[in-house]
Length: 420
RNA sequence: GCGGCCAUGGCGAAGUGGUUAACGCACCGGAUUGUGGCUCCGGCAUCGUGGGUUCAAUUCCCACUGGUCGCCCCA
Image 1 (cartoon, rainbow, N blue to C red):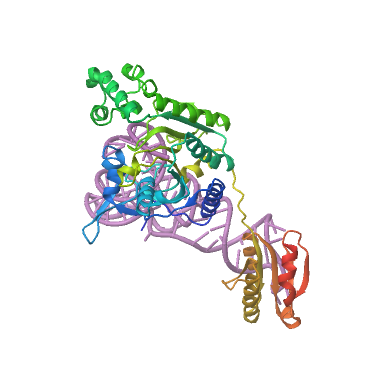
Image 2: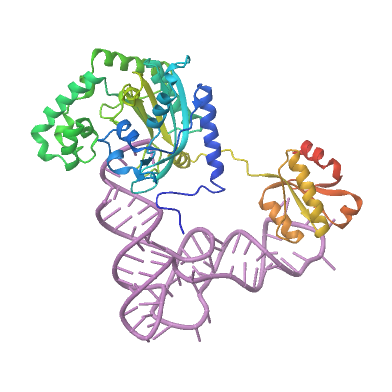
């Protein structure tokens, strides 16, 4: 038996990295005053159809959807925002006195895709959502949070790309212009783009296949169609980023793959060598209509999500070692049955005193027990033999210096606490 | 969803249509009857799964599963 395609086990040796990174993400989020939200891993299919958008690749071909025994259509969540917004509405968080409502989440997401490195069918996202504020300062805050998460872990090769998708009016005008622009050459575009032109002409812009087509190069930019309000908004977002010394690049072709975005859109990529085809570390943007689409009052929102798998890949690509403690405080070597019983007692006492302790369970000989202790990076080894048992002490060896001394049983916890 | 490459012990990695499938690392045991990191000796493999060709398949063919790279898309 193997884990299903596109899934992975995170086992000791790697799980420590996950724990470290996840703790880091949570700590930094707390500093920005985001609170954790946990939502179900599956939802009614309709939530994603409405929230993510019928025309998106996610909804059209990537969802894990099934009927449960009550004949309900259920979908394993492909992303986090729709669920968070659903929960925001369901729990009437729009009524909270603390606005905006600032939330973060971590957990597995599911998309049925062809796996390759950095693209799994089950992958873990960390994301934040700020609901209830239309202040460009919160856009900048979310972006700065995203950048800081990476920076504080030591990543250097980062590129922040931003764009504005405008408001409804801007998008409609741009949409008309795009259709008018591409219609005459429609037959020369790839099949997907021909469909996109009908359904969501904006997405023609980020087609990789037709990138070289001259109509692409001369295509009307959304930035030229921004309404005065949208344009002013985007200018303010940039001003905040400038003030926070966050470098960015404006890419008018940056289009997010989910339908709910408007105004600010951004993506963080890695420049690092050895990163293969996938360079996007995280993406996010503003979604001012989404809360209303999902049955809540008109409420602005912005958020972003990152993939922890890709974050770990980026760390690897940049050769960053996480400060993970792989040592063991104490290993108790016991010789014989009687000593083994005493060892179990001592190990228990030490653990109760907050000291990491381990003993042998393989009936190994002394030499092999020392080898095991060494392998576990034990800082101290306690030896219990016949003589020790008789006299009521343990031989305590400092594995780094090789020095050893006799410590009576009762004093072992204190001795170790003082010397660790 | 499309195309290429790949699959040998815990890990890395040779190899062959035919009796015992190299080697390195790790692990276990011994040399060293109570002390790790060095040395020497010994031990340790249903050759991804299923089917086919053949007197004989780990080796050839097919399917499946999985990995990987590119495309697509994204996190």
